[in-house]
Length: 392
Image (tube, rainbow, N blue to C red; front, side, top):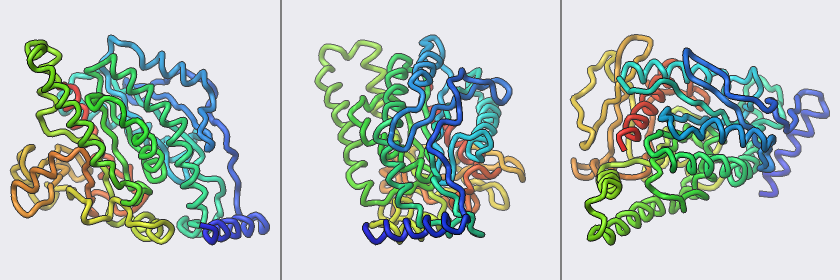
């Protein structure tokens, strides 16, 4: 670790000495504000966390709580946590792309016939870049990965954990309100840290986490799947114990049905052409990145219907085609569970953690997350999650 710190320090000092880089302050880009309308009818709010872990504007946290705390609403909440090289500044590409994604999500929900009036979008910003080394290829400033990884850990374990806990608390009072939380790159690392610290919450909260090309190794991931399985097992045991006295209640039946069906809690969607995670992250940190660990991968994903017809699929079987629409026309986001036979791949589908290896038809690189194809694939995945949660 000491050698890595020295390399990072030398790279940063070199660029500063030569005036070849720009430093970004650890500050909030948004004043305290209310949610604003985006798309045709959705809303967006930003909340920012310092790299030391504190929420910049505590009042913004309270406005978020009031905005999302309406117990009469059932509109889905979709959260995005920015990644490396990004923040919450008005011209940041992650923020612009997520804003556009909310409009795309509206259209996909309408096409799927999901009865929601709007989407409540929450953008969680943090200083994903302390220095821009202004090098011809962005990957050449890779030495900054070590301090940025440490910052993502602090963001996740503190401010983001607090935000996730508030969202889970609100959803506990709004049982039919879907919640999907997405983190990209080092934002996926921050989300992973926040999620691990919130696993003590009820497994029935219904929320789903999606990590896009996350900067997380399989060593960090160790034990998470077991913890989630144990959380669900504990809920089932509690229900079994209450069966004699509460089996006729509507709440008991709801929970029983929810736990008996297939359920995913965390999805890792990893582009296999991602060299930043697949190669450079592997060099910088111990362990294979979770999305590239063949022993951990549970599914593969590709776009079908463009040049190749989508196969007949069964949600409880080995394959699932989630309707998507890409520039070339209507298609499908084909998710295939891995396994030597039908029973093995069905077991993969029942796992609470899905690690999906994305083919090039979905995404070709680390930052290629909101191109027309991947944005549609991600929208298809989010719509699928919203539909499943709304049926609870």
